[in-house]
Image (cartoon, rainbow, N blue to C red; front, side, top):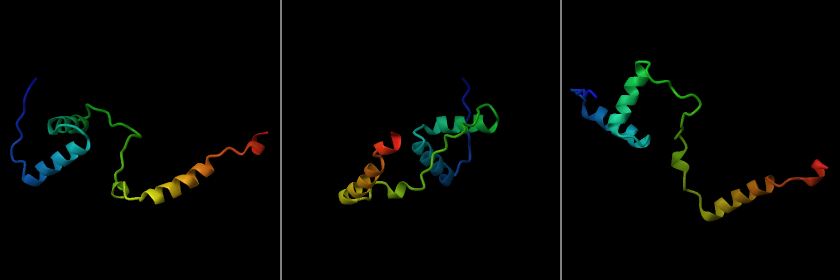
Length: 86
């Protein structure tokens, strides 16, 4: 297997690569290999598997009381109305 050295990567690019690799749970090397393969047409882009993280800042901020209130509403809406099914 060949090794390729990439020179001239500035600190901001290196930092961003490390951040993206961490978010995707990959090594920087694997991330770069995947990016190269995808951009030269050797790897198909997955459809319908895009991950969104735009609501991550909301995760885990509910109190227990807020959680139980919302969960109670959800549970009440999940009950089957037997009269509608007879």
